[in-house]
Amino acid sequence: MYSSAFTCSEGCSPVRIPLDEIVYRCPACRGLLDVTHDIDALRDRSAAAWMRLFDERYMRSAWPYGSGVWGKKEWVFPQLANENVVSLFEGGTNLFWADRWGRSVGLADLWVKQCGVSHTGSFKDLGMTVLVSAVKEMIARGRTVRAVACASTGDTSAALSAYAAAAGIPAVVFLPRGKISTAQLVQPLANGARVLAIDGDFDACMALVQETCEKNGLYLANSMNPLRIEGQKTVAIEIAQQFDWQLPDWVVIPGGNLGNVSALGRGFEMMIALGLVAKRPRICVAQAERANPLYESYLKGFADFTPMTAGETVASAIRIGNPVSVGRAIRTLRVFDGVVEQATEDELANAAASADRGGMFNCPHTGVALAALLKLVARGLVKKSDRVVVVSTAHGLKFSEFKVGYHEAKLPGVAATHANRPIDVAAKYADVRDAVLRGLDG
Ligand SMILES: *Cc1c(COP(=O)(O)O)cnc(C)c1O
Image (cartoon, rainbow, N blue to C red):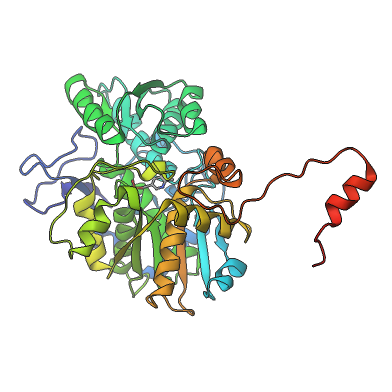
């Protein structure tokens, strides 16, 4: 039968650890763990049969397979008992054809994968459904898990809190005080999580949550935990599925802790290994200039990597100076002929706003990816006819301070060239008519 286990991501030893063990690092080398599947067992179905199975289930109601993640359960967590799945019908997100905006920037085939159109408003739901399901199964088997905990730049904590609440498992979240949006703060509060507003940055929260989990029997829900990567990798499979099992030429993805780019790579690799697709897309990781350690490393051909203290950026979910999955990310970029780009505050905010004029409502991180894409087009690396997918990581509505600040032209370092303001009008027809018609036909 199908099976999966934790293995060393550095390949130091052939150790295989069951997925219901509480373990985050290789016992031999302390490297991160991967989840490794028995690919030979999965070959008992042909590529065509897998595609048919995934298509039959996609967004239907046969629980839990209608979920974008659990519709691929055999590739994600085959041995999990269905009664322990904690699903909020995640995945199945809109692949937006950015036809008009794409053409305006010289691209004929641009798509935006709207991962933020999801239960808690970000792609983090894809990973959290897997992690919380694993915890539910551990508890069902008699293991003691006092609570699940994470450090977060806002979206991980929202997803963890929602899934934990749905499963009735206590959640504790560590947030950098004053560095997340109002919506992101209120989400875990609403779900009844214990919310610690730490006087420090994300990297400090990350160190503290690891120590707290290790010493007190809490389960760590950060993306160093590869169960989350398993869920997130389904976005790669879903993109292929939405293009009738074709892959794009390029995928552009904003990166902070660098779990998601690793997940994307794993999804593509698994489809190649099982014969569903043949070619690899190229991948671009996009970083905010103020939190760009991977970009700096890329400029040196990844010869070394130096963590940094991340600076102030409106792209707060990727304000990370010491990304935990950097090794995984560099391995992924090497395999996918990848590049790394960066965007300033001005570039990311104006790219987001410009694309909003094409019908989107972009969060700042999606803005980083869009700004990076514009640079790749300008450099001729991405060609007009290339099929490009930009991974939009969160819903713009979670970042209303950013959106309002932009349109009020109040974001530091940003010349808001697409700002749009409400027009105050008296309740009189003549004034209304003038306001409506001014400049309309010219
Ligand atoms: C978490 C997050 C990212 C970054 O993903 P990583 O896996 O940390 O690289 C990007 N955008 C948003 C909105 C996020 O919540």
